[in-house]
Amino acid sequence: MLVACDASQLEWRTGVELSGDQVGLAEIVEGQDTHSLNQDAFDLPSRLIAKIYLFRTIFRGSGYAFANDPAFSHVSNKPSFWDNVGEKFYKKYYGLNQWHHDLARLVTAGETIRGPTGREWQVDMVRDKRTGELKLPWTVFTNYPVQGTGADVMLIARLSFRRRLKAAGIPALLVSTVHDSIVVDVPRMYVDAVVALFYEVFDDLIENIKRCFGYTWKTPLACEVKVGMNLKDMVKVDRS
Image 1 (cartoon, rainbow, N blue to C red):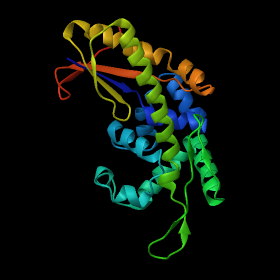
Image 2 (image 1 turned 45 degrees about the horizontal axis):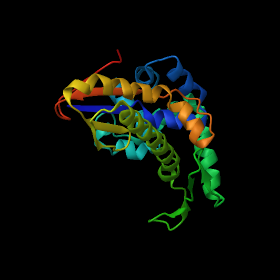
Image 3 (image 1 turned 90 degrees about the vertical axis):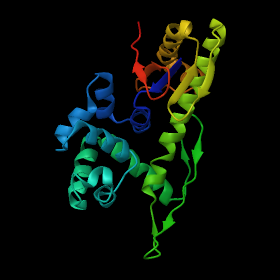
Image 4 (image 1 turned 90 degrees about the horizontal axis):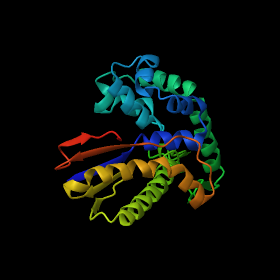
């Protein structure tokens, strides 16, 4: 049987953590449905569109890009529409917006971006292909800290899970650890035990981040666990 563990909203929670955005943090702590709230706040046609929009806008997409993206252009192919949604988004999540501009100032000054786990990113200005003028690569420098820090979080989760698996003597095979997902192949009789181990990993993940990096992570971290015979037919399993 396959048991798959996915970190819940890893990119969003990491972005909230790095930016210190208080609105995003409150929604996570209070267990609110961020996507439904944003659907109403930004006048979007569905929760799914609001969800996809959030995960794209973490990395500062432009109104023009959204208007020409098939995932969004059916809602509106007008850049002005999406620029308006973006203004609402960054007004709501003003902490994230401020952090993006802080990063922009570092890039403009040629300074290094540093993350809480010790990673560093040197991002250069780029040349506009049409005008030849230097411009800020917004989607790059807003992406790197989130993806890099999230990767370190998942590294700790994988190591923590592997140690627990070994200590429990469970004959399981780690078959995939892509991005925010960990997939294990395990005999049916051990499925429940492996599911429990995954939830335990995320119970003390923030404590382990502190132990490994000396950084106090404030945004709650959580996971979703699914079980199935193959990756196509997986069923969510809540903790017992």
